[in-house]
Length: 444
Image 1 (tube, rainbow, N blue to C red):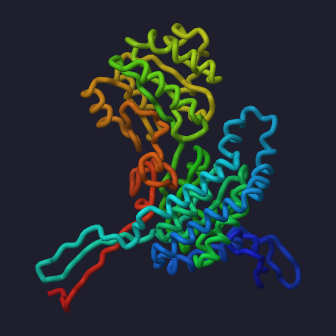
Image 2: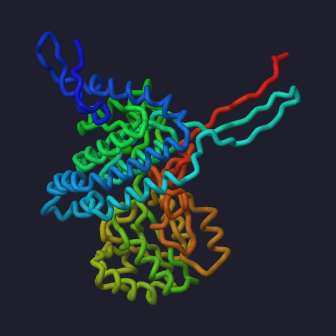
Image 3: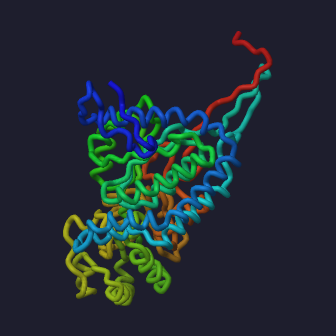
């Protein structure tokens, strides 16, 4: 039995059939993945030792490749978008999926910015000397082979490939079926550009099969894969956490809240509350629930509602909200705690900050929460007691982002407590190892 070789092992094109005694049969998910993951694992060692200059040159080549391949990328993206025509319920997902020349240029720009960032690999995390003269320290090293399973947004393909390469990690990318053609086109362009710049084959590996069984097989491939990063909704997170035999850092849904306090600059609060919902509603850091102190609700909500109506935002409110805003629809039980990813906002009038924090604790996804207030003590208490990957004072939830935080870019926003939390930049894509300098010491 031998596996038929195709043109490009990095994109998974080689694994359609097995040839047994002249007869073709469909491969299993494990048989499909095996050569891809072997190649990825093989690339991990040489990639981890590349100097920053080599990696940066490859990143610049990848950015140039995206710009040169714009036409092919847009054609592939159009194939994906056709599936969303006439389906209003999936309009938000289509916005996350859609690529334009400007968005492709942004992807290339972000890759170039990643090339300019400090390389964390090999960085000393501190040294100390023991009484026997031995020097002990820690240095940053790549994690190894990182499997990234994501939905909708094809820009994740470019961001993940660039961040993993810069941090010395091999990436195994598996995008959602809704963006399959877009992701495949991007992965081909990025992989070819990287290889031509001297990056080992397999460093950017793309899984081009969209069936669930391949994901389940990937989640159990602990011989080859060191970490799984899922980005998506509840169904994906449930699948990954139930089936993975590999460590997982979840990038979960964003049920983000803004609490408008009783002592607040109402003009500022209106500007932030509008931006957090409308600026780009289909992202995980968009506000989904607005909590308003009862003392300012009657003054604050009507002018904000006018802006929302003009922008096409559907408001779903608690009974007190609906009394103040006749244009609001009564909220259903599941509207609080829902990630709408569209121009819908849930609004609740609360008694005080304690009630707001209780609501966030019960309904939030530990992604991003913000308090809008002039009260210093309440701001500090909110920062201290609210448990999320990012907690803000007088700022839009849309600012919880690797680029906005000065990380250059992010692999995603981790809602996991262990290893990394919040926007995962280059440092978060490394772990550490101990190094020891001795001069003949032995253990007595």
